[in-house]
Structure formats: C-alpha cells, structure tokens
Length: 164
Image (tube, rainbow, N blue to C red; front, side, top):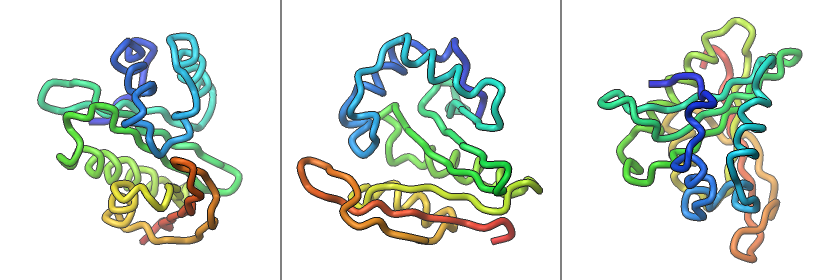
C-alpha cells in the first residue's frame, strides 16, 4: 500500500535505514549521516510542490517497509522516480516491484505525464531488474559516472513513455 510519507513516519527505524550502509549501498545517501532534523527537512521539501514522497506499507500489518519518491517536471511532462526498501527483512519478496508498478502505472495514467524516468548504478542488479520488469527500457548510460568501493561505475538511465 502506498500512502503519503508523514512526519509521524520519521522515527529511529526510518533514520536507521538511511544510516544503514547495506540499505543505501548504491544511493548517494551513503555519503551522509542522517538524523531527525535532516529527515524532517527532507520531508518538508515536498510540501507545496508537485513532487511526491510516499511510504510503502505492507498490507498485512500497515508496517512501513520503504519509500518512493516522484519528482515531477510539470513543464516537460516528465517524472523521475526512486525507491528505497529500507526493511531488509522483506527484500526479495516482491514488495518493491509491486509498489514500483503501482506508482509508475498511476503516474503514467495521468494526462500531464508523458515520460517516466529512473536511474541506477550498473552494479545495482536488483534495481535494474525492477525497472526492466516494470516495462522500462535503457535509455542512456553515463560511463564511469560514480565511484563505488573506489571503482568507477556506469550510471544507467531507464525510461517509459505514457501509453507503453
């Protein structure tokens, strides 16, 4: 289930995800130390914008297991989407794919969105599978764009157009 991510969702568990190097291994969040203040600032940055910050909750018990973001560029009819499944105990169970497909299909059904994009590092096989299983296609590669464990890694950009 997707619900807006609220101030009430910011707690020690959520902050722990952001500070867990296993969870943020392929995210630029790995370079920052997070705390209540930084999380409150980030959550507030969505207020009054077209952008979305959603909590991913397990239907069974309404437990927060991750987040989804959607950055809308209204003038261009595009949206860039990102996901974090912070609860490692549910990794590999399909919750991320289900949330991703639900969110991306909803976004692409909007008349003001013509294109959906997302990016990931070439070494993030889980995210690559998620994007491809949702019907996104590789659009561009930025060679040796980022450094992971002291090695240059390609950044892959995927896209899906409204009506695909």
